[in-house]
Length: 398
Image 1 (cartoon, rainbow, N blue to C red):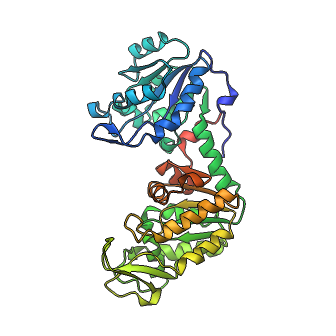
Image 2 (image 1 turned 180 degrees about the horizontal axis):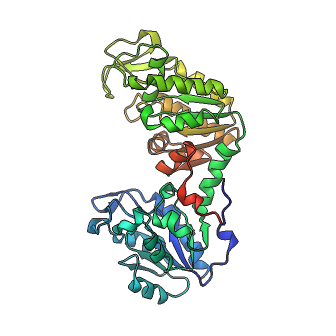
Image 3 (image 1 turned 90 degrees about the vertical axis):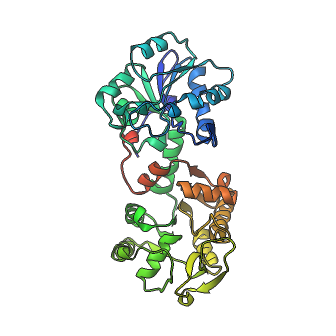
């Protein structure tokens, strides 16, 4: 964990504050379909404006790849931003750098808020171009990064600008970093990781790193099939990455060397097709027909997983344990989610989860609010689990 300054370390009154947020909100037919990121950002914006700062919001929207794309203008979310900040004066500036933008900011009154146009309309944003970073820095007196979800990218508005002016972690960033530190850097042990998902190939770096840090690792989902295959289990027609057998065996050896116990299911829910209407049954691992697929851990595996979780003091979760989108193959994920939520609420467990599919599975189980911390930062959360330095975080070092 690097040392960084927060909003408690500075008086922002009368400052021009460049506030990096992640307002890349999902939309459907031009309307915001999930306002979570916007809703979470409002307290930070309001806090700075209430202190008398001129708040200059910078963000990206979509992937315009350095070109102006009207459908990806920040105007799409401006009305929602104004509605959420009722009582504050909010303006939209249709550019993100330049003398005209600087003039508009100079004309702002203390306590007012403006939203600049999509940063990614400029190729210099994703290229972390020093000149683009300087152009942004000229617009403010200090920089606040409250966008952990994009801080794994070395972009001008994350890493570049933070090195050019006094920089601070916003409340959301601070909360995320503390949660991550509590769960992996200085956890209360035993520490158990629940790692699932479809393919090992997408999480090789994560697996190599996590087995060096945790006491136990429960592996589920399609990626568990490759572990089972590497152990000599006949898995029928299940999703598997046979070419990664040697890598799985390497991970198994790393786990042994680092005293990490890898826990796999001991039975399975199988079917010949992935459909809710498909005929399915629970079988032992040595009874999987050649034409069947493992689609979830079986009923005997759930109490095994549960006992390991009950013996833990900290849980890190990334990835579902089965094909949760298609009931009944959500059974093990839902059962374990409910248990983790229950133990977290009782104070028997510190739990942190993250990743898109993980969030969807926890939402489906109705337990998101029961865990200690659920990260909405997909890529940044994964890279942190992989042990990688996040450029946007590292740049906040005073």
